[in-house]
Length: 321
Image (cartoon, rainbow, N blue to C red; front, side):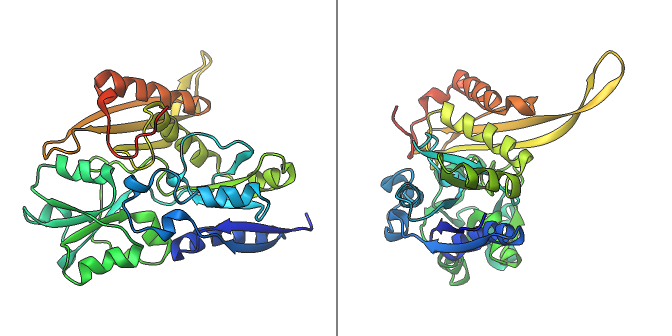
């Protein structure tokens, strides 16, 4: 392909770094690439994400794509609304960075070492719910801003700790500030956390095939497909108190003529109820299915959570029908 591929991205340091990994892969394959910065409503507002709505970091990029200002858009996958966008296709999901959450605390402390009453900052209802559910007496403080803004609240003594996605810190070369990577048993990450979504126009078949052949990672796509299907079936937005983590694992299947190795998707999910109360109820479920059944697996796990009572889910970010 001889044309220059214009890749749209937000202008933040993290977004540019993430987009750079996609651009580098294309350049390595011999493609000419231009990175185009696009300002989004989420970048221009300091209000909590739950107030300004789902898609605040993605709508402007998608508009630029549909208007042919750019040929490709790179998003943090967890920021995408669950509903598909007419005229746009998910062309590739690159290999995922570590999806877990990370604690950055004063004095190198871990979560278990922080005292009752410690002030922990996060802008995520999902993290808020799971921190409160630990029953350790933390004061959870809502925060916004880029990674440095959040980290400085700890370094300057305003907060005892913050919780951020490990993936963003690693991509920016800031993994050294992490005092503990949180086990998913304590805190399940957001659906598709650590993954990127690379979109193009549905009628740009050449670009789609190029991205899929160079950038797409099959195992990552299967895992995040399951997680996002669960989120969509719960009718919960990207900032809702819902966590999910899927992994592609090897299993053995009896064929009658001996065992063979097969790949399956293992999915864990959590939904919080009563987020406005100090006593948060977490509903948990898990299931396994074949890799080709990832989307149905997510829907099935959501149905199980709904049976457990997740139908009462009404946290910020819930999408209307």
